Image (tube, rainbow, N blue to C red):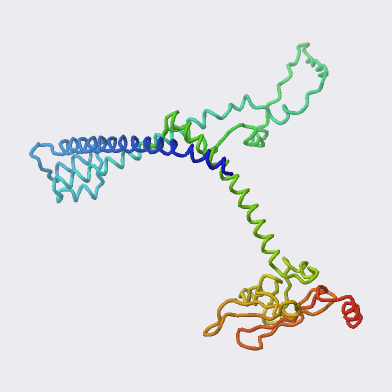
Length: 356
């Protein structure tokens, strides 16, 4: 992993510097483009205003505005036509600029949509070049000779060619038509606004870095997985599963009991719950070297009380099961749990015989 990390770090700096340089250049060009566009819109708005000011007195009368609004190049609706006479010249110019800007954006959207549709239509094959399902079936190796038909007048009757059923074409799937309507087609259509694009040299540096980063992330993921496994083994080694590891089989298992009011759960060496509430996490055996009582502490806090905790009495039984669960004191719970892991050979024979 160290080698891949070094490779990644070496590739990161030049790629980062190239991207920053390209971004700075793009921002400068975009700023200049916006300034040019702003000047163009202002000039166009002033031109429209001059067209609106028919008598050239630098003011707009209601009659002039109404005449202008009837023209084909008008950008004003009826309501604006009635209200614009109350606006100052700067406000009129601002209104015209806003209208011009919106009109430009709508035109750009229409052009992009038209280019997208044109490209999609170009990809669609002509139906006459598509074979119907019948034509796609296996051909007979040797075609039988067609019988010639003759009329009563002695003239040969020409056989009418079969006309394809239109339903045959409707049944064709999109993949048979080889029509790709994915959004990927939009990548080749020019964007409405400028987008940041890198030159070949910059893109190569970015590609090298992304490959190095991918290799590094893969190596790190493998390292973290191995490290977690080591930690898990160390955690298991620190747990006491009994003198002969007889309780190890209970780890990773969970057992439930429903008393009609609550659902109690015990996950040995992990936690205890009452419904979805934690009533204790594994702390250890109550007495070292004794394997009769499990202690679970630091569960969810009680209202105006301590954190919930649970004592689990472990008894010999023919199967793993919670036989009882209760709350003898506020936020203190008690389980009785039976398991074959708690049985000695003599106890096991006695318990099984007693249950029978």
